[in-house]
Image (cartoon, rainbow, N blue to C red; front, side, top):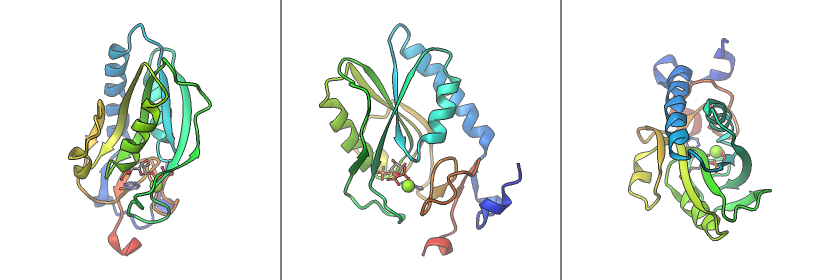
Length: 185
Ligand SMILES: O=P(O)(O)OC[C@H]1O[C@H](OP(=O)(O)OP(=O)(O)O)[C@H](O)[C@@H]1O
Ligand code: HPA
Ligand SMILES: [Mg+2]
């Protein structure tokens, strides 16, 4: 599908990851997850809204039963910088006590959202809580967040597409690209 109309300011040389690269990597992550959770029930928790595409494709790459639930938290508002304040906009429907929980994210940038979320989820008494993220930026590597499954370590640029937004736009791009600073500065 030609997405030039939504791609807008994303030039071809700014495509960081193609749809194929993303889907291939999610397939590899799914194989690892299947092996690690063999014989255990598994609840995938997607973090709205950015993780919608990752959740849809990762879940469908898994050849096993999974449950899916969603949380909505926000720390970015409409800008490109974390506000530092995490708010729950929608909580889980599921009681996660004694459940194996795998949090599914699109990106870990400062690590602030996930470190807060993991503390919150652990306080509910799950059997385990692990993280799967498609993307991770350099700053998050230095944060105290244990990430079990990482798709790609990417450079420190603001990225959009495949669920990731700038001011709620670009989420429906199939690829992941960097946004020209002139768009947001
Ligand atoms: O590691 P951090 O610096 O905390 O950033 C990562 C978080 O920021 C984005 O969500 P956002 O709050 O923008 O909400 P959205 O998913 O609805 O876009 C992204 O989806 C992650 O959840
Ligand atoms: O690079 C990013 N792009 C979009 N949303 C984000 N949330 C944290 N980092 C990013
Ligand atoms: Mg966002």
